[in-house]
Image 1 (cartoon, one colour):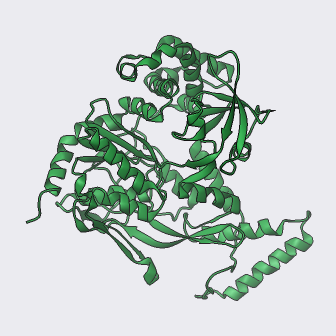
Image 2: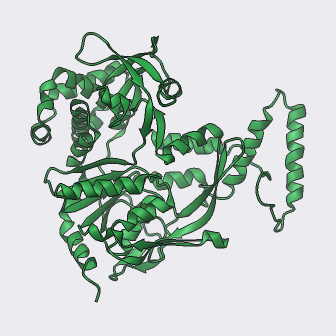
Image 3: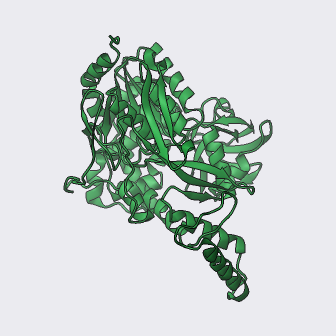
Length: 532
């Protein structure tokens, strides 16, 4: 479902084609007469304005022309409207002002997925599974995502009144929440696994604060006894290049090691990013998890760790985005991101996939899940070598040292996930069984999803008219149980770290990675030996 939405958005963005000269350097004609093309665009614009059956919006026409022009360059050079750019700035800056919840719209009700730790909502005791029924005395039934942002976000120090219906409680609860600065964390999870020696850190994007977040997480885990690390970059679409460099630097024991370099058409696009030696304090074995959704900055980090034999890369071939974009802001708050360079891993690999078949096919190829019966990829790839002579390949993403397929549900599971029925069913069950929240370790090791909870899920799906195909349901029972148990952990213990701790217990990529730490340890020991 998510994939189709991405493709639909991309296709919509390229419906109108053209070229336009706006703020910026003068275009230089190479073969074509640029002035003639601009005159053609002006003629079409005037003709549409004067003769189209309805009164056209000239601004939209020109924005469509901008999108079409950029689409002719590559899939990652894009135009970003003012409102979208504002939200992007908030995300990558790492903060906004509001109440501090992640949410979803469940059956037309605004439902708390989790409070963000340390925020006003968290301090007041708002919990996962709470349903916000009123905002400032007005019913929130049927509210949209945009309306949630409008009503709950606001300047620091201002307040908003909310009424909450909590599963298991008869009467609603009223809260007055004073808005504050809300951090947007790029480290979504950081904890010691059940063996108490394996650290797990999940990075969801590379924002302005990622380096500091990862550094603090590693320090905390090491102080609690971490002896080895799983760094999860799966489904991480990337972000800031300098943050990727700084995170990779955390794992390198010496200075003057190449971590990534860029090459472009102009001198300012050619840069080298070198290690500083600050990673000497983190001498533990490292395994990096990647998949088809790991792109850009994620590939820089995993490529540096792989090329320098710092650790192993496990999972599935990454997305394959080796292009660097520079943002150029516009006076109206919009922006264009223009590809200004290509980046290369330390061994010299360019991992950008071809995009000559068009944007839609490029996205599909990157995110498509490999079918079990599909023939092996025979695409010719350029051969490179790591510091210790292992063979790695350029082109088409980072190829893992060990390829492990992810656990993927059928279309039935996809429908249940898209409607967040696992979460809703778990929230209802948790309200009826609060005794499960007394001991997380016991819950993790001993709790088994009962048949009555599975029956409740089926009943909820029937009520919501979500189709269940019997053969797919049977095939996905383990997948469904893993999702239900993870959502239960989130609601019972009100902690997303514990959600992830449960979620990875049955993860085949994680389970395989655990068996490979002896090899990763040998690599770490070799790298951290004193230089002679």
